Image 1 (tube, rainbow, N blue to C red):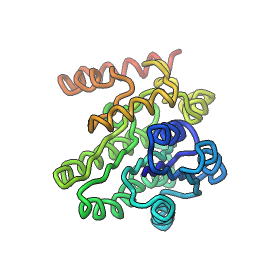
Image 2 (cartoon, one colour):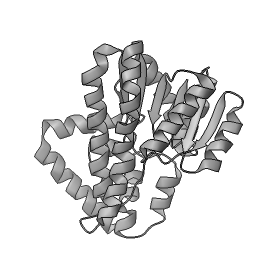
Image 3 (spheres, rainbow, N blue to C red):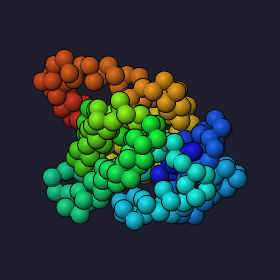
Image 4 (cartoon, rainbow, N blue to C red):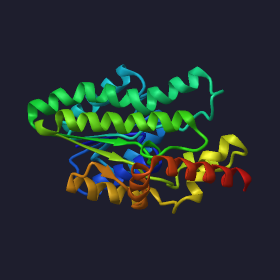
Length: 261
């Protein structure tokens, strides 16, 4: 069975539907938007449940895991998909930085803290972390998003290195632009606040969430660590690694071009 956080909309909703369609024993949809999570579960049918949860709270994470086990039995796949895109530059307040770390990073740690010992004992389990291409490259216009998504990737890497030979499989989803409420809200903002979304829209195709969910299913079946709905992200990463200074200069040019547009 699969647990999907941030499942009330966007990529999370699409993954919940796709997992059910692929024959999952059950799908637990969790979201801060409780009615939204319940609505997605109702769309899926009897093999799904919806629950309100703040993934930045250990008690709520524990409640999600307990509800999933009670409804469908042992958890096979946990999708740490909930995320926030908040903050801009050095003037971003500490509480906004804190929110970004809590949802984008600490929520993954709290879930893994509970799940990994069980999976090691069973000899199997799958952790899917939703990061972003920003976690491999960077995010022009949003320091908190860039930094926390890098941390998301780093934690997923650590999990794979530490537990990969003990039955725990790990994948990390790193898309660029996806047609979600988060992207659309950012596109509606002007100036610095909207720059990160404008950069995303300018650098590649904006995919539908269902396309991303399809790529996820394929990657999980192949047990690939990097899940890249936008294949060009791998080439960007290679260029970055091969000549960091050149890559940084190119990103500065991109920033200037978007700011002037």
